[in-house]
Length: 365
Length: 167
Image (cartoon, rainbow over the protein chains, first blue to last red):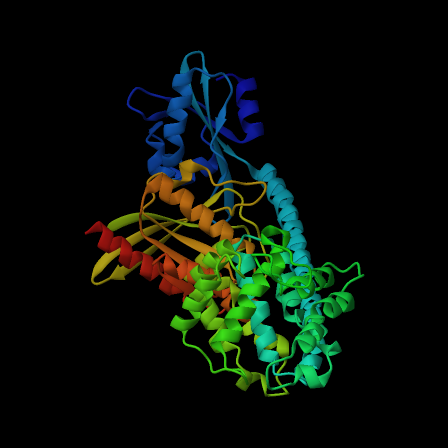
């Protein structure tokens, strides 16, 4: 080894090995202090390096392939850290290179180069952490705004609850059933949130129906029924004409939730997919909730009876495909039904949003 | 003595190095110091009268700049996947790393550690994600490298699995 070569090795704090035929490595340059420490001061000159550096056990296979490939460029192992005799961390890196037909392995103490790389990655990763925190904070605040929107919607809808038999629990369930359907349909998060709120307002137009009709116990006359039907358009007008997507959706649902798949519904006699999907969903879940619960004019039906009755409505008043999906989701609907009850919502101190949160839509596949 | 190689894997800044430091030296530092490359430590266990020497590979966490080199997994006997409970994104990363290891090494002993239990009020791991992890049937521990909660348990659980696997 000439003087220049030695100066170069010293300058890069590198030790050079040549691979022998037995897979051992013969040292070709002057051993450094750190190397002698890790070699347990063994100065034989030929070493099974993986025995002293377990990390190399993972690199040697790659190195062998590299030497066989005859490629000129060096293959590096990536850095690894060892502790020296004083417990100081030493970052090493191995490189495999083919020179003059010889398999050469370089072991380098990365020193300052490693510290600079640590600093660079430290700063980048701290930046990533800050960015992640910021994004989480924005998501949290967005959720908070969404909660407020839901609270406003529930409060607004609860105005009608004072007048008719529909309870707060009913409207909340409608929102949750609809959101469950939307999630199963693969809608994006925003649209699922929107239908959860919008569906609760489907009957808000009842606020414009006179008490004598809305609260009438017996059957409505034809004339009274015509007035009652107006709740769809009243609701749509109340909620329409805004630039707020959730209110636009709510307006559509309010207008079309009494349309029927066979075109026999009101107010416009729309049929099949002319009826907006949001309204077709609410139509199904509203029917289910009405059938499964007691009303002044009827007793609560059992699950079996409800399923049978709804199947009879398939292709008549209800969208058959969506109804099929609804039946697939029945266990989730039953859970919503049992967990959001009038008994709980009678507690006026209860935050309505908390109730909505109690149903974890994440359970929906 | 039975010797095994294990790895701690996971996203960056989830506390892999801190868990090792707590387990081996009972030390913890609040300051985040990133790992670059690989650090190898050793720990010796006695489980059911059998001596087990673990070579613990602390591998730099995955992020936009670093990927786990497949060569690191060579000869791997078991691994601990670390999640930061306060960072939702680390769950997805953990599951994708787990998938990568299974594809590369097959089904070998594994433990999931949901770290930073000392700040559980800040956790963002959802119930759904918990259920998803539990459904995998792998042991899941809530750990804190800061308080030491369940730190030794993740290593001894993995050690126990390794001995069983060893026969």
